[in-house]
Length: 252
Length: 193
Image (cartoon, rainbow over all chains, first blue to last red; front, side, top):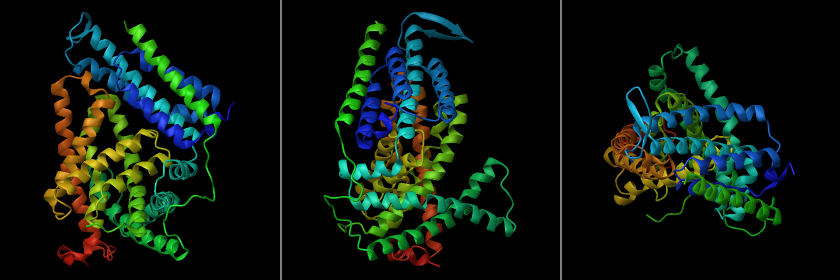
């Protein structure tokens, strides 16, 4: 039970998550995103085993962003009419604006929770392998992405090296954020030049070992879709449908 | 212009995706702090940062898809390295890439000067804004506020992505690392060190 979301086929999960997000975009009542958010939280709680401390930490910036949405919509909301429910600092808020503001806020929360659900329960390598096997992404692109992913730690080290080398040659630390923005070019150009050389070397190495990039039917690490994925997709869609229906009912 | 993509070009696009994936992550954290204070408009002026990889890669590779693919790969890699924006980001990447691609396609992949690159940055901004309008529910906001956001984003796309992308491509060309790519084969490649 606690492994269900982790074992779900990544492509199916990806499609379901995307569909849910696009569906949410049609609703401007506060209840639909709120119900959906609670539903996703319940799924995360019962069907996965994650580090909740880290989850809370990751959720924090989104909560801030959601607060930004709340007051932006209250202050700059479209003039949709309705009764005035309150005023603050000379800004009158109508009931419709109030509902819209909470709707957008809960939408941000629902989106973030859904995203974290994907991020916390999906293995990146399996995700790309599944994209190639289920969604038929060309192997050239799939393995090209994997190369990039594997180079991530190398590029991080290189960034530190470039920084240290520049400091050795007497380039001071950037203090203001203005200096930092101006200084990005000094760091980015050597990073990118290094990336170009690494890309060339990796591509030659792959081709030298017989990688042609042609599509194939059999894979070294097969990723399957099984009955569990259909059940989970069904649960997701039921939560989605229930929150849409519930939102419309409660909204009236 | 119907050459197939070489593997080294795909891998290049992917590595650029990684480098910019890191830049984007930093930018998102920076933006989130602002966003709590001043709302979603916080991202608008810096939106161009997200389009640079399209324009830079197109300047170097100069093939159909050279704006779309790297932006998509950058998004996939961002999701892989744990960007909390999640899978939705891949769709965003595709849409931004298409916007930049549209500008280059409109000039039939013949011109890669500053004007076209700024146009591509603006194109990416327009596409991403239309998508954002839908997904983030800007319809609930005051039209004049939305217009302000839109203008900021297009300007940011043209200036940060267009001019910035061109600036990066020139800087990179001068390092001599780009021998063997389309950018070095044209007359403008005279700047090679």
